[in-house]
Length: 455
Image (cartoon, rainbow, N blue to C red; front, side, top):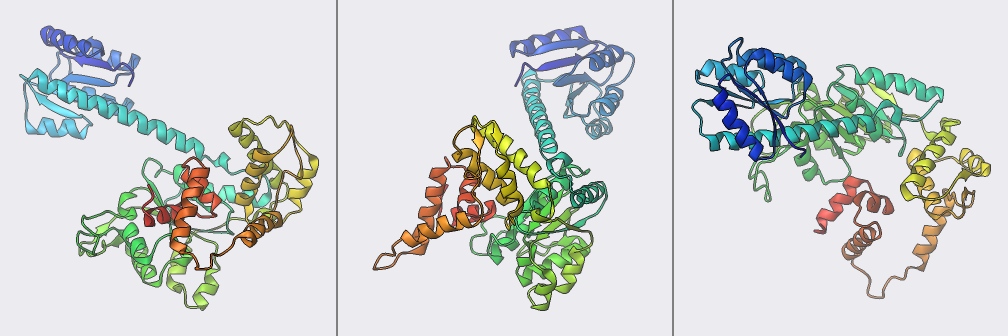
């Protein structure tokens, strides 16, 4: 943490002097104010990490200063001091955002301990604010690249949904079209952005684990439930829960999810208490739910309940020149990330990618660009560097054909663990990249790591 800046607002000079001495011994920068007017002037011209504020001042009260702070700088941490302590004032001070309320005469050690904790709170608030700013920038509307008419319509819908109070949103689209990105953009551009975004892939866990992850469980609910645990719905209160691949959710959980969407209450596994939360549920699938309903694999009433605000994300092959825009974007980013000296893209590369059908959509294009930049030779990206579709499949087929099954067979559990470890080793323990090597989602990859006890 940078050198903490502290403002002491106190009309007694001896108390100001003693506090200054103690704070400066701890390498703090200290300012003083002996009345409310000086305090307001200092607050408006400087930024403080902490304000030690007396309740009774010659021209006002500490509560009035707190009210001013709440309107102008709600993040400043304040410790109130008073020789006129009463419960009503203490409650009012806490309501107005005071960190703590200390009665005079105070023990200096006690005050210094409280100040230390308050400064830690200031640091945490600053880090949260910076992280929130980073996420809002990372998931701004400009993160979706596209000028095609279908994408312009998508931008309008996403913007409207983000600014609305819609509690249920349904994303459909092929694998790799960017449903996860759209869900995050909706969250981080809404008034729910300060609150959590929780996501889970419904195919990554067994039915029992998925239920526990979503709804939580009480102690003793099942064999390994040694402690009570909050589920994602509780943890995301005020924010957003993203249910990816919801079309593959087990039937028993579909009924429980339907009840939650209709009543906004649920019970933890093994619990009896009704828990109410305020979350936006964004769900996504690449499955044809109408067919799943006809096949008896998905509840029709849940499909209707999820489909309140449907958003269809178009496949890459239907987006025309957006393919060129995306290729330039990805290649430029990977050149910077991998520090390659590629300066241009051969025009034949554009022709190649624009005539390909892209079954894996934007994700496949991004992966192809990453491979091309990493393995490309020279300063020009050539068509040979851009390996697409069948070439990748044939490479893998050759690899599998060369694999010889031992005469006594092989334990698939051991083989899976070996592949997981090799992928982590190849990527320097980067789980996201290791998951990509094995064509797994991050959630599915982490599930397998836990299954094999790999940390």
